[in-house]
Image (cartoon, rainbow, N blue to C red; front, side, top):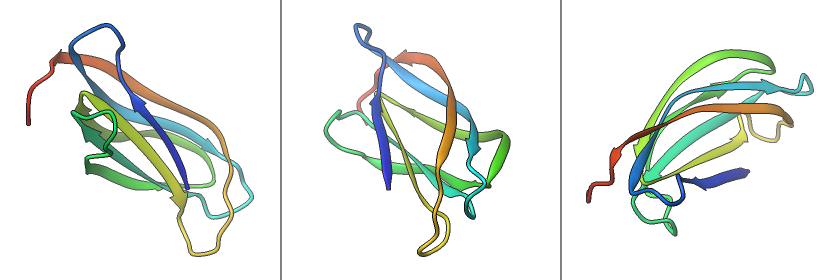
Length: 102
């Protein structure tokens, strides 16, 4: 498993919003699964808010929505015991207004 985060905008009280992911997964396996987490605490993953699969090769824009003070992207095997390698990952990240207590 690979965990990326926390993703946040330093120096601002704003929340972040991910609207989509773009990924290239190496052609050595079946691809991988992604899960997005959002939280107001930088030390806690919080709640899983979106998930899906990335296939081997080029993935068109994948709509993946998450909003919070801190966001994580978790990548893991799509199939048990399978191999995968990430070549490129891009997340469309935007400021989304003042942080709110949830």
